[in-house]
Image (cartoon, rainbow, N blue to C red; front, side):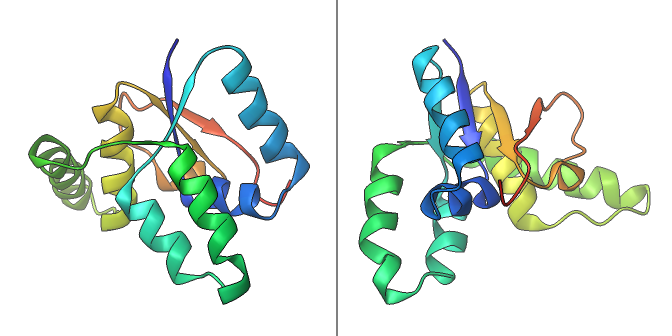
Length: 131
């Protein structure tokens, strides 16, 4: 049994009931993996909701385990941003916090945008967006 943190692109696909994302979620649940979400993804998803989508979003969000974002995750996100900036690569704060939340639960990250998560040691699963 392992954890898998669902990135914003994946949660959006789940809310839109896109078959690929729904099937992947069912598969991870069937094998006993635990799907997580973090506060950053909740904020990003909520920001883009239409009022008619709010109830379904709350239902999905509350069905997932919440990955904490505390001091260790904040420090890891900051370390990644600083390290990549020294190499000339800008990473987004939200992406670093999402990745740190995945690392914090000892899990992998499911995303439609794997290029946004080049952090060493982070296991990234590509769930193609829009499927």
